[in-house]
Length: 228
Image 1 (cartoon, rainbow, N blue to C red):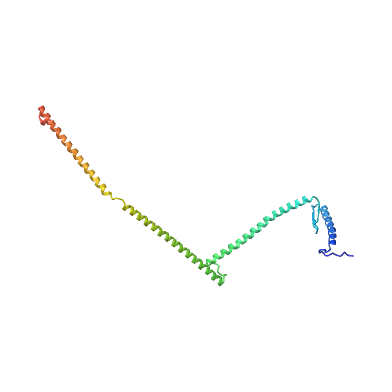
Image 2: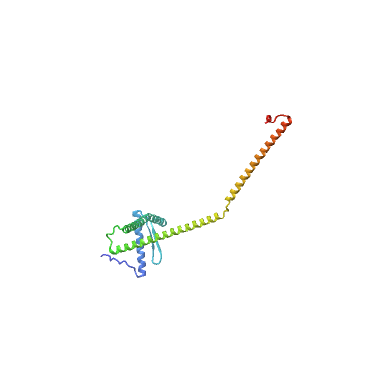
């Protein structure tokens, strides 16, 4: 007679549940031991009952198997991490490419290119965007013109002020040109007078020497003509 298959669900009776737990635990540990012996595998089982009681089985050392499991989990996480990073980078790259293509298309449409697929509403919106952009460009240009005009006016005022200061400095300089010329003429006149005085003195000296010579010639009884 075939054995009736039991439905897998929680056993309500606590006593029956404990009996089933003990039987199944022994069978599970037996299967684990057979697996480790037949296949030369490291097997470890950890089971907690509903009351919190620990039951465990290890084909070798439980700590060694747990350490091996932790090391394998870390290595597995490191091996999977580059794959996740590459997928993330690929997703970002694809998103950036889409944004670049969309921005390039809008730029070409603002230049009046590739307008065939646009609807009337999209063309009107594009026209508004262009008008707004043109208004901002003209406003910025006018602002720069005003700034340049203000800068030129400031420089002009500064130059006019410097010119006025130079005029004031020139007007405060004393007129010394005439005084210098008069002093020069006086020096020349004095030099001329001194020269005439020297020549007169020399001429007088020469005449006196001649007179002294005449007197000497007369005293010596020599003719005056021969002395000259």
